[in-house]
Length: 411
Image 1 (cartoon, rainbow, N blue to C red):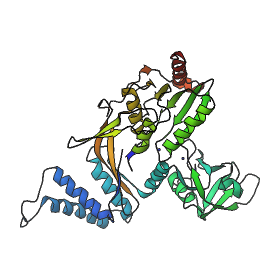
Image 2 (image 1 turned 90 degrees about the vertical axis):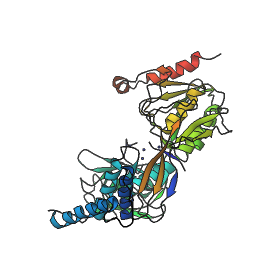
Image 3 (image 1 turned 45 degrees about the vertical axis):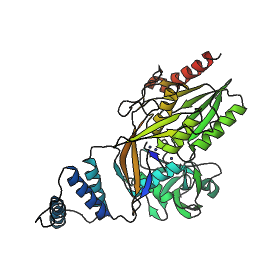
Image 4 (image 1 turned 180 degrees about the horizontal axis):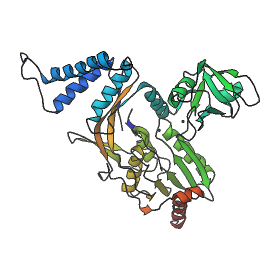
């Protein structure tokens, strides 16, 4: 699987990547720290010259590392017993010294959320969870989902999960982690409901909650509008269904909205671009040895001839830039909006033994015309701004211009 980094229900309301996923095997915390320290010394140009050398640079580095932590354990006025937190901090600090914002360490809980987003589904209760300014956790159940079926009502305040009391300062991700879990398992929710003096307890059996990455609607008379929010495992199938359904109700041309799409998996990005392209290459991947790997168009697109416009902005990044760059270079359609983010690096993703993961930048990708966009972005064919005032007044001049362009371009 490939990830192009880019991020819902049993997620916060209003909350809303290219990598190979591999496994390190049983890699311990401290083994990883040692590997990072050794690699740092190596990259600085130090090597062990002989086995009889009294002190190697690597040994010195390890010695200083453990010497420091022994002094912390002996003298720190406070609690230094959280070994996991110290280990994670050491890993993150070592990675930050590499100077690459996309080579990162992801802790287990964050990795769980990342995997759920990229799968497009998770085990949950089927409710929006929102933290209010006063710290209250409020539930809004989705129709037909487990929370609603169990009797949870809109506005119910969540005060405990499996008898663990929630407190105002509790990290929101910790609350989500408690609510989510294995499909079929029961989670015990204690809520406070207006008009009821005593807390109410509900047992909710978690179901599979699907988070669509594609939404669509017909813009009369014949423009199909499709919004892609992330590139996950379901995106290409969802897009194909959306195109076919819009075609049945009269769509003959399409606006594909990639605004604020921060990326996701590479393979779905190649598949999405291929829905609109006849042949050729979607992108090239260049590794540090300068070897290039082409990613050809897949021969099964369902909208290879219909007029199309893509909407982009500064939040269009990574996998969504792959799609937009392919469309632009093949002159298959135009880009309307503002300049994209400019993220064109490839990450290998290693899952570690404790459920955490390591993302390591290993390559860069180029557009079909071999444009380097990392740190630069793609320039739209038609520059159209979207202001705060537009948003406040529910106006979308970028979408309006895209529809106008498609209508004016009719033969």
